[in-house]
Amino acid sequence: MTNSSELQNFNKLFTDYKERFIRFAGFYIRDEAVAEDFVIEALMYYWEKRNELDPDSNIPAYILTVIKHKCLNYLQHLDIRQATNEIMKEHAQWELNTRISTLEACDPNELFSHEIQEIVDKTLNTLPAQTREVFILSRYKNKSHKEIAELLNITTKGVEYHITKALKKLQLNLSDYLPLGFGFLFFEYWN
Image 1 (cartoon, rainbow, N blue to C red):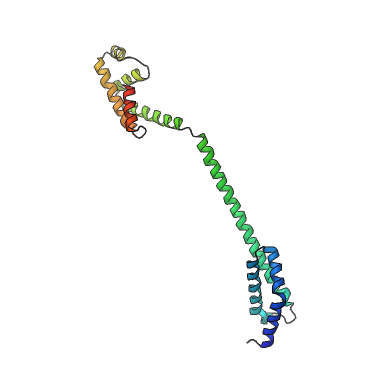
Image 2: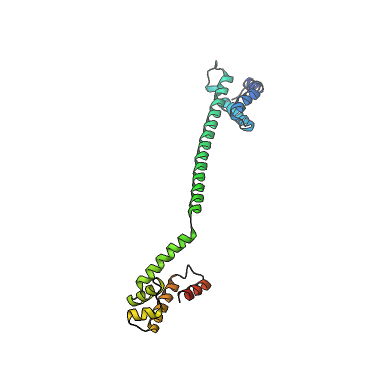
């Protein structure tokens, strides 16, 4: 139970030291509202523990010690948070730099031409041997239909049939890379 003398002593302590304690905490914390909260919490902590203290205790020093520990915990937490933010910022910067350099190094023409060439090669490997051979002679070795017909002992209509067959298969397999209008251009180019 609280007697009036204890309450008067506490009120005097509060009046005499509150502003000093706030200045002390504020000097380290640099946030007056937080400093004031710590002082009020320390005073309340003292009030709750007052009966457990030695009667000869230096009460202002006791309260200041509580404030000191609250400030230390706050600053250590702030330090950890800033270090974590710095690590996250460095990681974000590294990740951004990686994306920038990767994008700068990206050559869409090379990327698509490599992918397209792979699809063409795979498609040609799925064609019947004679169709593949006719197509290669026509498109890669620039032989005319007549030269291919004589070389393979087939008709020029047979050469046209094999080329058309190969082009249809290529057009189908390259449809994701070639818009419809461009696909017809591609088809026409190969004919």
